Image 1: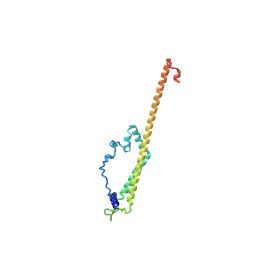
Image 2 (image 1 turned 135 degrees about the horizontal axis):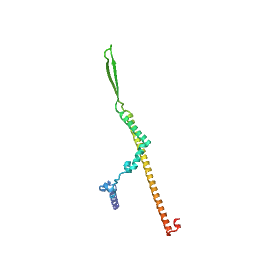
Image 3 (image 1 turned 135 degrees about the vertical axis):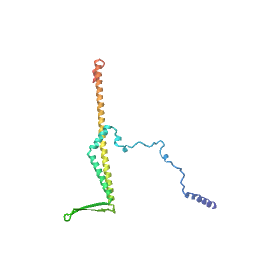
Image 4 (image 1 turned 90 degrees about the vertical axis):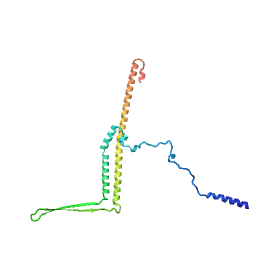
Length: 212
């Protein structure tokens, strides 16, 4: 009985080690460079989206056509006017924070018993300042800024569409010109081939079946 009690106490004593305080293992310092492949080189190429259209399309003829398209497109001109209007509205909403001044100049002419005419002038003025207690001015400025961003985005989208349309048409025409050139060369090659066969046939080195 005594041996059984000692064995039980031994098991309970060693079992208490299960609930020891957790200690985080030392994994060392992980370098940021080790998280990536050693042979992975940073991408230093500029994004196409960050390039201007004149950098993207370097053909002088295409650039001239794009300039003409941007100047003649009425939708783009309307979008540019909307941007200017939104800019003016935003400026007006910013000026609403400043005090409003009002001047009232006055002048009088008076003469008594034929005496020399006397001139009197007076300048009156008043100032008022609207306090933005309920956020009216702030909301108006935020709305004007949002309208400006929307107008600029629309103008940019219209400009991109015009540039893309001109460039697509230009390259399509270049492709068709190249197809015409290749077809012309092919037809010329076939004519030379037929002439050669005729010469061989006249020399008796080819028969008429070769031309069929």
